[in-house]
Amino acid sequence: MEILYADQTYEIRNETELVADFLLNLCCQIESFGDIEVSVMNVDYEKGMLELLLKEKYRHFTGKEGVITCRRAVILEKRG
Image: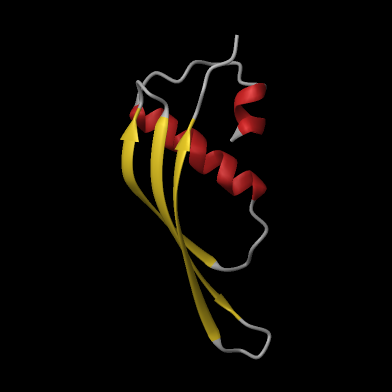
């Protein structure tokens, strides 16, 4: 997220735009051929907080299907 917000030239005005910016940043940085599902658990625009659950389904080199999940909270701080 730091990369996206360091050079940001527009203002995020609501929770929907905050989530959309996160998803844009995720898509730009991820290098995977798996299917990724993102669930927004909590979002607070005023505090710049996102709580997310990410789940990826992928195939091992043996052909066996794998699943990994990750739950994270992200807090964005304005600088300056």
